Image 1 (cartoon, rainbow, N blue to C red):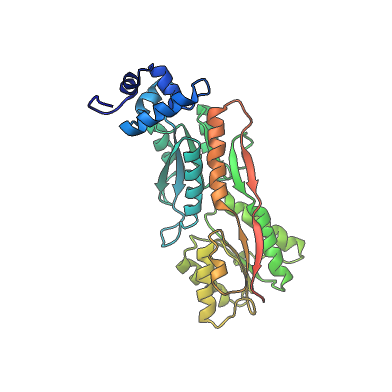
Image 2: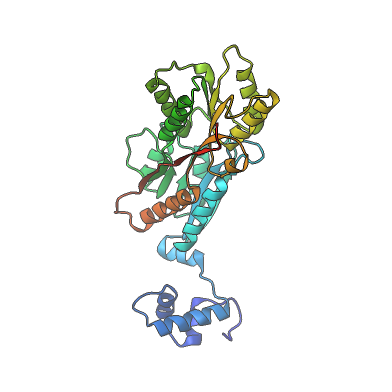
Length: 339
C-alpha cells in the first residue's frame, strides 16, 4: 500500500481496486465473497498492517466486540487468587476464538459489587459482562435484566428469574466430601466457608449439613468457620479448634490456602494427616497431588468453566432470542494417598 498514514478500509479498497463493501466482507470471511478474493484482501491487509477501527465499528453496529469480566479478589493475601488464573485462561481463549476481546475488571474484597457493575456499564466499553461472587438475593440480576444488558453469572441465586449462568455443584461436592470423611470414622468434622453472603458458601454449608444429618450425627455450629481463609487465618482457626475441649478429627477446607494453613497447624502439634486427622479440600489448582499427604480432593476443570462463561455470554449477545445458557459443573472426587 503506497498511501501514507494509518491504513484504513477505504485505502485498502482503493489499492486493491475493490469496493469497500467487498473488502469488509472479505475480511469477515463472508461466504458470498470468492475465496481467492478473501485471500488477496487478507494478504494486502496483513502487508499494510491494517487493523479494524473498533470505535467506528461500534458506532455503526452498536457492538464493541469486547466483553468484561468483573472478578473481585478473594482476600488480601499471597496466592489468594490463584484459582482465577485458569478461569481467566479459559475466558481469554474462548473470547479470542469467538472474535472478541476480554477485559478483566478486578476489584478489592471491600468494594460494592453493584458499584463496580455501574462503573463497567457506564463506560460503555463492553457488549456483555460476566458477574461473579453471587449472593442469595443478588440485586445485580434484576438490575441487568431490567436494562436488557447481556450478562452471564458465575453462580446461581435464589431469585426466581430466568438468566444465564454457569455454576459448580458446590452443595453436592460438600456433601460427598463430608460423607467420605465420615466413612473414614471422622465424626467431628469442621467446615471452612468464606463470605457469609456468598451463595457458593451457602451451597457448601447446605451440603455439609445434609451429610451430617444423613449419617446420624449432630451438627455443631462451633465447627463451622466463616473467614477470609488465607493461610495464616486458616492456621489460627484450626489451632483454636484443636485446642478446644472437643477438637475436630476432620476438615472440609474452603480452598487450597485453607489446606496449607491446616497442614501447618497439624504439623506444629505432631498430628499426622490421614492417620490422626482427615482432610477434604478443593484442589482446582492440582496442588494437593504434590504435597505427599493423604487427602480427599474435589476438583473442577476451571478452564472449561471459563470457556463456558464466555461461550454462554456470546451466545446471548449474538442470538438474543435463543434459550439462555444454564450449566452446572459436577466436579470430580479423588482420594490421594492411603490413610
